[in-house]
Amino acid sequence: MGKGFRIFLVSLLGFCVLIGAICIIVPLARSGEPNIPSQFNPVTDDTGDDAANNTDDTNTDTGDTSATTEPEPESEFVTKAKETVQTMTLEEQVYQLFMVTPEDLTGVDTATVAGDATKSALEQYPVGGIVYFAKNLENVDQIKTLLSNTQSYAKTPLLLGVDEEGGTVSRLGSRGLGVTELDDMASYDAPQQVHTMGKTLGDELLALGFNLDFAPVADVSTSGSAIGDRAFSSDAEEAASLVGSMVAGMKESGILCTLKHFPGLGGVSADTHDGAASTNATLEQLKEKDFLPFQAGIDAGAPLVMVSHLSAPSVTGDDRPASLSTSIIDGLLRTELGFDGVVVTDALNMEAITDHFTAAEAAVQALEAGADLLLMPEDFQAAVDGVLHAVETGSLPQDTITDSVVRVLAMKYEYGIA
Image (cartoon, rainbow, N blue to C red; front, top):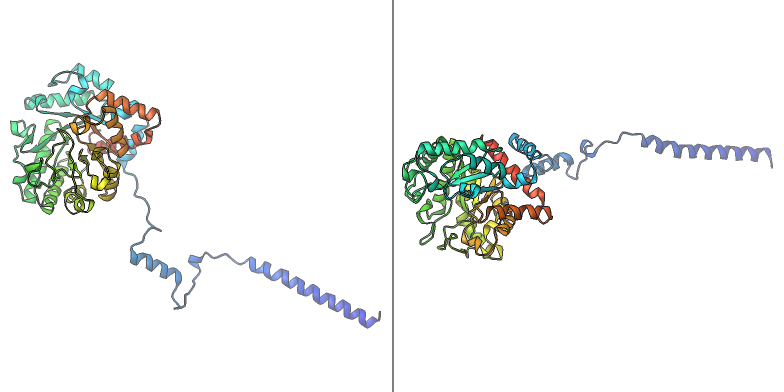
């Protein structure tokens, strides 16, 4: 091999080494460039607009704030309620979901005083609340002593409730017992007057020692309905305006008020006290009429809604009472109307329930459906035992109980009851 040819080979080899080095070094150098996130790296589309800014503008224009919206912070009342629940046994939690008469609690025929029997009963059965009727209420001083003593015996402060609607449903005002006597709600048509009426009613009930009123009626009455003049109006929009005003007035006083009887009893003639009641109304018809006063009351801040035993087969596809229906409570009241307060059943000793369900079945199914407070079961202890058994066997999740207890306790804390 000649000297010239050897020089050519060496030069060719050197050139190849140089090219190889370049092929290795350049990619490495590029890999060391900073990795700029796309949202900070301006990219233009065909029109020359900044893509990132264009996306933000689109979200703003359409109201889509999902990328930036954070869940609302938990209220101090919910936080306190959760802390309290952690100190409670399962049995104590279950009892908190019941609201009963003083007779159911103590076993006496008629309770007009609260002494050792009441104290002992509350220690054994720490219920969430007690509801009183005319037979329990004799005079102003007796009422104040009865309620004050009862509250003093409770480990967890009680809901002390009464049905004081005015007109035909009045345990106090119609008997001159510390509450202004009111006419039937159908007699009133001025929102400001109704607001003042609600404020006065709340103030007077609180002065006696009550903290919960099962009022106002939010039904839209029709001719021949069992509700009749207990409702504000047969016109849904007028009823909505007056219900909202009543709730605002009661809320201003600090009394707990209750919208009733969801999804609306105003269009049926049957009375659930005496048996089953059903409506043929479609969901659209309910939305256009019956739901309006409930929505107005919810928007005004009503802390409780009472669910009736009405069945609505055109809506749910079955004859299940609303108080035991997930479709009605969770699907309509919670989701459709946006209610996040306490759901209480209508009295579970009504024949619309007792003709078809045992006390235990009704209690368990109401909780499964989304109710928080169980009002006056036909057999209080059987209902409690049924719920405990359902939780212990796994058929009713304990979280269902806990969530409802937190909701009830948070409401109590917010209104200064506990």
